[in-house]
Amino acid sequence: MRRLTIFMLTTMMLMLAVPALAFAQDAPSTAELSLAMDTMWVVIAAVLVLFMQAGFAMLEVGFSSMKNVGSVVAKILVNLSIAALLFWAVGFAITFGTGNAIFGTQGWFLAVPAGQVNEVYAGLSWTQVPLSAKFLFQVAFCAVSLAIVWGTMLERTKFAVYVIFAVVFAGLLYPLVGHWIWGGGWLTELGMQDFAGSTVVHLSGAMAALAGTLLLGPRLGKYDDEGRPVTIPGHNMPLAVLGVLILWVGWYGFNAGSTMAASTQVADIALTTTLAAAAGVLGAMSMSYMYRKNIDVGMGGNGAIAALVAITAPCAFVAPWASIVIGFIAGVIMYATLVFVDRIGVDDPLGAIAAHGMGGIWGTLSAGLFTTPELAAIGRPGLFYGGGFYQLGIQALGIVASGGFIFLASLAVFAVLKATIGIRVKPDQELDGLDIHEHGVFGYPDLVATDYQNGNGHRRTSKPVKGATEGTA
Image (cartoon, rainbow, N blue to C red):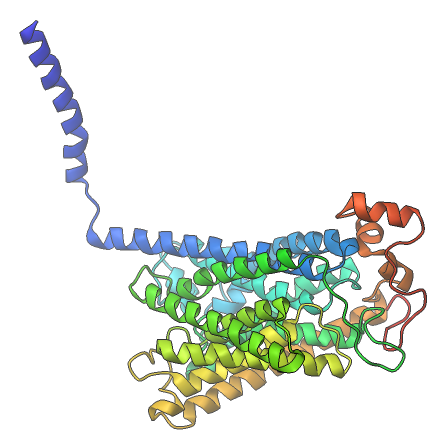
């Protein structure tokens, strides 16, 4: 029995030792382990950015009426799907493919000869993670930019407009600006600083949103007969705040993931992102108290988003103290912009123009002010660090060129849609809600369906209101 026991123990030890010896012989090199870690981080960051779609869904649902929540969810799903397919087919190649100063001309459908990824996609040759990881990360950015477009156009836009514009935006407009700044285009050559997309992602989405909103007109009931703005509250503030928090978490993938490597810089970028967002909440709430003598929860959430947008461009280039200044000012600017656009007749239910538009402009300019010499991996140090006005000028040029192009191109696309299929639902459909007319279902059937069947339809008014666009266009 003793000999049998010794034999069994010896056999088990040998069985455990064989895999270990084999692993020791084929152990991956340090370079292989480093690449694996970089790839894993980029994929995780891509998932975080992709999950921001849930944040947009909750934010938009919270700020919408009950009768329109189903249309919000449907729009999110369809636009994410269109963005993924169009960016795979042509958008990624236009953005990062080797080409000229305006657009990439190689790499359609991710078709690359073996061993030539860096030659075909020169715009991303600085990171060595696999092509699939590069695409997963960047397509999530494209989907975020597209989601921003619709924040201003809630509760009155035809669903077909979402689909058609998504094809143009994800397949052409967004990729062109992306190539100019990130893909080796003319703004890349000038040294424009936009680490994670204050301009490429957020300003692009906001300028397209502004173009569509101007042609669409305000929601019915948004302005009274004298043209004064009327508050149309969202139906669920907790859901809206949940959306803000999801976006906040996703932003760590957005900003820190843009390193596209598992480096120590990830933690530094996460720090500046956190400090800016926190300061943005306080900046917006301070404005709310000064302006209305109350603490507006929705404005606090938008303050966080505006600050996150603002820190996106300079997050890797600035010191922690500067991120607090950038975030706080972003919250203040967001609130002032929201009040202004409301007064001039621009109906922005989600505050996308204020948060993503002005936040993107301020954040891009702030890189030209606060970039430190030690962190200026791209371009030059900021004005406050002895770099002069050069970098600030490049930042301003990028804002005007990119924002202006997206606005005019989007205005043209929406104008064509308005003249053909129309961009706005009929007044009775808007009053009854898009859920039943566009999708045949209710987001809250127990609450909304009864009123609709009784002829109420949750209508705010029985007649068109001054400032609203009539008819199907």
